[in-house]
Every structure is written in structure tokens, then in C-alpha cells.
Image (cartoon, rainbow, N blue to C red; front, side, top):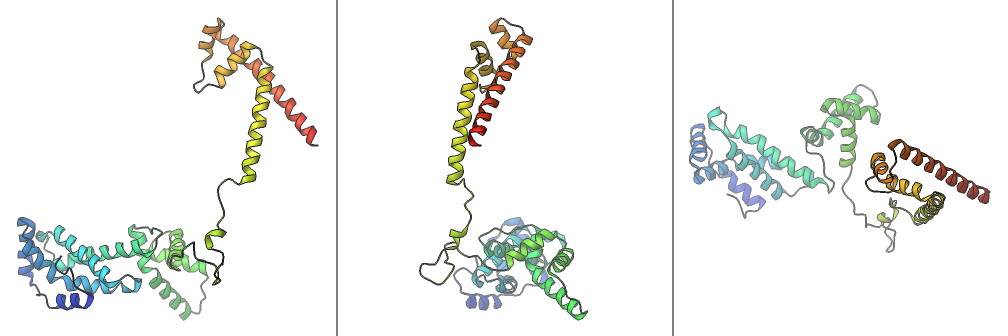
Length: 292
């Protein structure tokens, strides 16, 4: 890039000394780059408008990003603008480049604002960069009218003003309220203070719950084994093939193997389930009576 290796101050001075292009020269350079890929023409075009990129980058310093990084992102936007600029449209390059420079800087600021990714849609961008300004104006107007806005009312007015859902305003308010903190930071200044990560609820299965689940599973398995043992061999075969296989067999296929009609197999299956149900109910009552 034309300004690689320069610090903020040197970069600004070099940009301010760059030539100012009149409309005719600008157009000629744009055609040379678009039609002939003339890199010298591109260099002159980028260098001439680097002051514009630096000026726009300086407006985003309040978001805490290093100025040199902002300038780098602005220059990337400027180069994208030069690559996509169509001189046949009759628009000055500076007018066209403003959008690309601003978009590049805004994307960078939003990417680096927080480790938690902030939405990058046009509405989210508008909210991110305008929410505080709109909020301050609404509060001034309310104060001038002698009205005290409640938090919910203010957020709803911001959503209406910016044209985004209320949920987006509430989310963005949280994102802009403070910077990221490490979960390994201590809650107090003491050397052995508890870390914030220690107070997070463990969403995994707790030991007591695991023991209880394993016990319940073992109990149900025992009940099923007992219920199956009360069936005859043919009934156990039908239940196993119909309910315990990964791919249950059809009544028709079982009937062909057992030499029975499809309806007869269905009746045997129903009878087997009835026996198992009675066995399971009997066992569960015994357990309840024991506990009582």
C-alpha cells in the first residue's frame, strides 16, 4: 500500500502533501485502472484520497481502536472503492469512496468491540453507531418538556427512531454498557479471592442425578427382564422382533415365519403386552408398598 511503514503523524503529513486531483485527472486515472489495470494510476488515485480515509478514520477514535488500525481499515475500504469504481456513472470518486471507507471502518470496530460477536446487519450497525447519540437527544428533549422517561419507554423510543426491534435495542444496550471481563478474574482484591467462573452454574448432570438415573435404569431393566420371563417362547420371540430390534419386523413377515396369519400374530402380540403390563404394574406396586 502507498503508506505502509508510516506512523500516525508521518502518515497524516504525507497524506496532506499528496496532490489534489481535478475531475478530469481523476477520471483519466480511473479509466486507466479499470481498463488497463495501470497500477501507477491506482497508486495516484489512492494516494490523493488518503487524506479522506484518515479524516474518516479519526471520527471513530472514540471507540477505543488504535488510530493506525483504523487508518489501515480505511485504506482497505479506499482500495475496494477504487477497484469497484465505475467512471462511466458520472460520480466523483471521493463521493463513491466515502461509503466503502465508512463500511470498512465500521466492520472493524464492531469486530473488535467485544469477544462476543455483535450483529453486522445494516440495522445492527445503525444501532451500534447511533444508539448513544439518539438516546442523548431523546433524553434532552424529554428533559426540556419536563418529562421523565422510564427505561422501557426510552428503549422503545430508540427502537422506533432507529427502526429496529425493541429486542435489538435491549441486546445492544448490554453490549455497549461495558467491556469484556475474564472469567478468571477474582471477585475481590484478595490474593485468594474466588474467581467469577466459580459462581457459574454447572449445566451438566450432577453426581446425585447421575446415581439416581443409573439406579432407575437398572430397576427398569430388572422389571422388564421379569416381565419377559413370564411370556412363553413364541410371545418373547414376537415382542423381541417387534419392539427390541433396530428395524422392527412387520406382522406379515412374522406370520410367514411362524406359519400364522397376520391377525393371529397381532393377537399374540397384544396378549404378550397385556401380560407384561400386569407384571410391571405388580412390581411397581410392590416397590411403592415397600417404600410406604
